[in-house]
Image 1 (tube, rainbow, N blue to C red):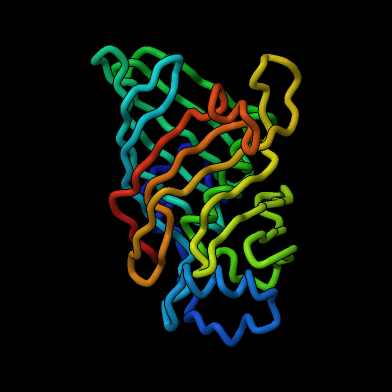
Image 2: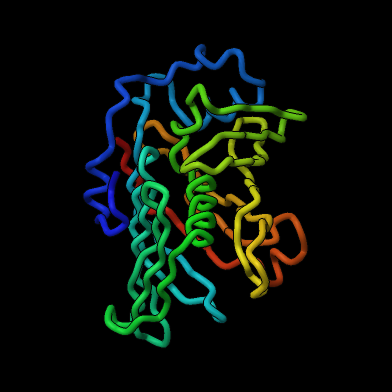
Length: 249
């Protein structure tokens, strides 16, 4: 087990090769929509990755929209670290969000010195696991395991159920006829209105995609709370990101 203080490089280097490649015929038993999504997301013969390293930029809403640049590692066996710098009134806020081996934490400092937000505990951990569940979309190989349950109600609506970091994920996807991911939604733990923590619909709209080393993933997306309602547009959306690069191992 790792400690929550590990670095991006340590998490990245912990990734273990699966020694397996993607063959669509292994998924012939899945609903047609699930096969279409996986076959669009992973090219035939692509090595099944256990981790992805992302570089991204975008905007995050902290009362107002402010720019950020970030690097992220998702290692499915251990968790994720999102390390970013955002600029508020020209001053950098530096820090990270993480979930490692069942321990979530947030730490952000103005100029890298003065604490702006430091949070941990069981509620932060449960919310961070929800983020890991959602961001499986950047590591589609994580959805190829035997422990993933797929159902679909029609050709464009897909549901994925699985357990990660001790929490059950219930992801709803919409896809187009090519298998391209259009939206996702899941219940994620939070206390947005300052009340007790509870599950809130969390999701994203995918606006662009690119292919990296055989993986086709969303590269421009809008993310937020109250997904699927008018509140998403008016108050829920808080994260707009563009993926600049993705490396798999």
